[in-house]
Length: 184
Image 1 (cartoon, rainbow, N blue to C red):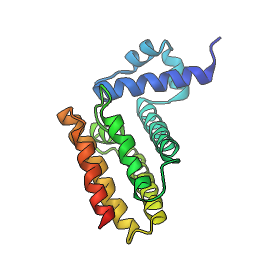
Image 2: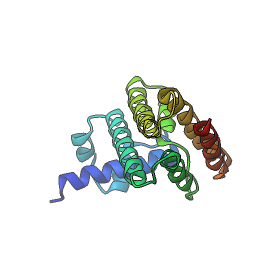
Image 3: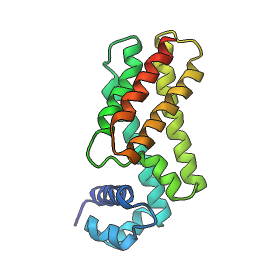
Image 4: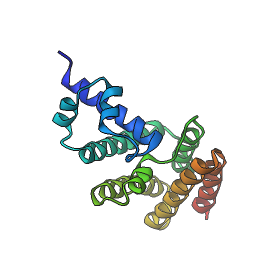
C-alpha cells in the first residue's frame, strides 16, 4: 500500500507541473492521475474536484515561494542590499530554462479571475509586500508601504516581461529601478 501523504504530494506536484506547462483548462484529471501514477479515486479522496486541486496547488505553491524567498535572503547583508537580495534571487529564477512566468498570475488569468483563486493571489501579493515592507523598515525607508507596492510592481512586471520575451534582462532592469527608488 502506498503512503497517502506521498500520493497526495505526487498528485499536487504533477498537477502543478502540468498546469504551469499548459494551463489549468488544457489539462484533464485523467492525465494528472496517469502522470502521477495514482487513481482517480485517490485524487478525489484528497481533492473533491479539479477546482479544489487547483486551489490547493496554488496555495501550496505560494507557501513554498515565500518560504524560499525568506530562507534564501535571510542572510543578505543589512542595508539596501538586503532589500535588493529579493530581486537578485528572482533574477536567477527568471533566468532558469523553462521559466514561464508567475504561477500565481498565470493561474488567476487561466481561471478567469475565479474568486477563490484570486483570494489566494491576493494573499500571495500581500506576503510579498510584507517581506518588502519589513526589509524597507529595517533600512529606515520613508513610506515603506508605498515603496513596497512600487517594488512589487517592478517584480511582477519583470516576471511578465521575462516570460513573454524569454529574456532575463527585465529582472536586472527591475533591480536597477528598485535600487534607484530605494536610494531616492
